[in-house]
Length: 362
Length: 276
Ligand code: HEM
Image (cartoon, rainbow over all chains, first blue to last red; front, side, top):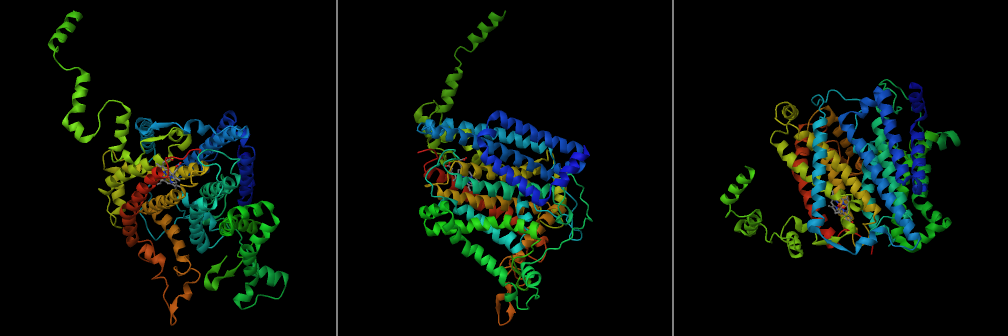
């Protein structure tokens, strides 16, 4: 059995984990007709449960981490997200089939009928309250809230992890400095979420489940939610050990593991390795290439893309310049995380712009 | 024998009121009528009155789209988030009876909660309820997104929702420190360290060195946003009391207020969304 575990540990690296999750995401979108069939979905469920049982039985390391009390809710989250993804895609697929045949969505059949809130809604709320209360009670009886030794500044646990729901942010710190990963990006995530209703001008798909009527809204949102949030939480929990080093999910966390960091700034790539003249002393001159790259990415790329891609052209006409501009800006910043990840993996790139003098590193 | 007994009882209670009559009596008595301003019988009028005359139920509309009240549509996730919030409020108040937010007592009060308090699962309910609420709010947002329910006229309620999401995470985060154990202290240290790098406002953030008057830096380790958040250079007792007040007073009040607005807006925006 340990061959299988070792093989999985060997295959899983930050980059391969990312590629696997993107492939999974792509398959989820592409084959939605197939996996939303209840029979098929149940099979996926069994396979995943089987896999977790297998991991728990054969890897004490995995079991130890999975059963830390504060990590248990992650399974609730993963299965909750999984189940409700299925439920929403199932209804979307059914509705899309109906719409393709010229029928209205399922919701339409009952949406014109009004029911009395008392009792028709209040009893549902009542039952949901009872079920929710019982589940919470049983959970609380079975699982103790964790309590470690009293706090002391004298001894730092390694790894020090944020609560699990913030591990996506903590993972970003590997690729971006704290001012971006910890402050600017979270702020932009919040602003970006708030902006969604003002950017998405597609009048269709309001009040019922559908995929085909709004793929350009659903795909980016779910990419952010699944790939840049949920899977990173999983990675941060199970695959980041001491020193925030990467470990396979079954690999023991060796606190002495040394990972050689030979990451290189863009400035060094250009001035030293390509031009061969050494770094200029003036920071502006030194980082000029980084400024050009960032400037091109944020200012030059949007018009260029818009010109070349007909879909974007249409979008621009539909949304108007301001909305389109904001959308482009937010999308480019969302893409900035995977782009930097890839640059790190492929080129060992550390900073595109690196001005430690002002703590200004990108 | 049995018949005889039955007859005896029947005779004895011949003039006693029937259960129906008792119900009638209660429902028409002064006490009942003073509390519920509508009659008991199940008529359309009373169904309307049940909602309209109750301040809590009044957050609901009187009637709702049939498609909107279905579990498969809303997943009950907004309601569940709210239910968990109420749960957390109640258990949180119970915890406040025992907990003192000082470096000297905090940890041992938590130990005492576990070891000495009868039926001591309040802390468990509070902690797991908090985790569950984070998950429920995410799933609620997910469902609102997948049904396109943020589209006009519900744009602003989505914005309020995003603020509620942030507040939910803030509540979890500030609460995480209170047990004052290693887990708490270092998770909060990791989380708050980033504040040092806030552009212009953190002393390790880009631009901070530009904020100066006559060569005197205004943003330094003892005056930046990280210091303001922690009440010091490190997570310490000052941080504990700050997070305690934020966690138990400030954030819950803001969140509860916004929830009231959120629910009100659901109604005012035309009830739970549905196809046109
Ligand atoms: C503490 C957090 C929250 C609570 C207690 C809450 C509660 C609720 C409830 C009870 C409803 C009624 C329908 C339903 O249950 O789905 C609702 C609807 C709604 N919520 Fe929330 N919510 C919260 C957070 C959010 C978030 C994070 C968002 C989005 C970012 C959001 C956006 C909306 C919108 C747009 C509606 C109207 C949906 C419709 O008409 O179909 N809410 N909320």
